[in-house]
Length: 543
Image 1 (tube, rainbow, N blue to C red):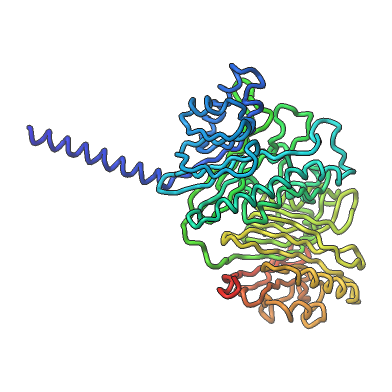
Image 2: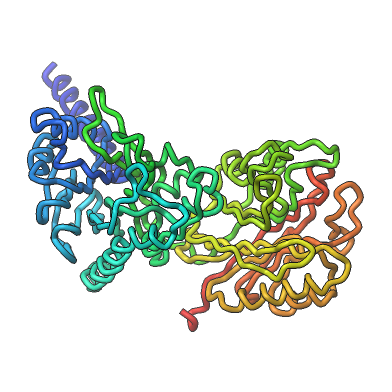
């Protein structure tokens, strides 16, 4: 009996020990969550007795592990105590709350605007985390304060945000220059008091009513960071995305709070805005919360994917029926990383008055960019790029006008390797005389020669192999070569003209395989062109 009892005790110990080991193993692989939140006068705007407890409720319900606070104003330590978190303040405004130990102060810049800490996460991992608050020059969010006809004035209002962020990032680079910080992920989160140039691109014109190249948001993106919220929410939705302001619905509803991160070891997997409480949400800012997962440490040395070029004729098929969902279904089957679309409508009556690039973005869950050729039927007519990978910047390259106005649409994307690349989409003039077309090609080539990152060039070139227009690109780039007897892309029912192409540069870094014209005869008057590609690593001598 005694031996049996000892065996039971031993068995229980082993089960408990194994369970603890499994729990620790799972914990070492657990995702973690970062929140950025301006809590509005320390959360006390609705009263010192009710506001801070509601802040605690929101943070606890969010299950955030690291919180970048702004407008902490004396409430941070109490909030941290209620949560059982570590508290790292600097000055009165910005602070950090962390479930994980704070092992080093890495703060830079002015104490009112920036606080930083090195955090010790499970499994001997470290993160450099910063909470920042950026200034603005004048009010452009309250009713009647924003003049969309004065873009210079709007940019000036947010320029102090860009100036301070430039200085903060420079100081962070200096502070983390020691080799001991090499490879440590960096998270910069806070109240930026400026909007995103990607939200305010042409793709969001129907929601934001202006195209504005805000100068703050490109700073970290160009430095290799990712916008965690936009990366995981490709579809632009002004009301859903906004962080200013859940309390003032008559104000301009904008996304001005961000979580940026830079690391090949991390991947943003989900992001949300939080603006509700059972009683009353305690801040004039919504919170942003992003969840991150740890990735394998080995950075991929090459990037492989699939790219598509397709003239969709605004979704009007050979049966003369406009059906954008049918177009999206064709594209969905191709499972592409990048898609260049020509003849795309934006709020044009003939195609149902919808933002076609945005609708396809929603259907395919891809990032989208749009550029217009011209105004048409009260809307716009142009081209689009869809990307599985987060965008850094979008530009419309003005080309010489021909039979119709023309642009090339260029989108810079961040690859899983950490490198950036460009996708350049083109639709050249279609008239038989190639004078307009060749002039457009020459202007495009001037732009391409300025790019220092790899790029794909694709689209409807409206010219044949061997023409001077095609030779201009074929002589300088790698081409996704089609089968000689199956290269025609137009017209869709019985193609006999090869006018759609995919090129890439620098040629030595790109290889193509399985290039084919899809046998799709109904959805458009063109057939889609698709190819698989590999972008090889930068040669060691050129790094």
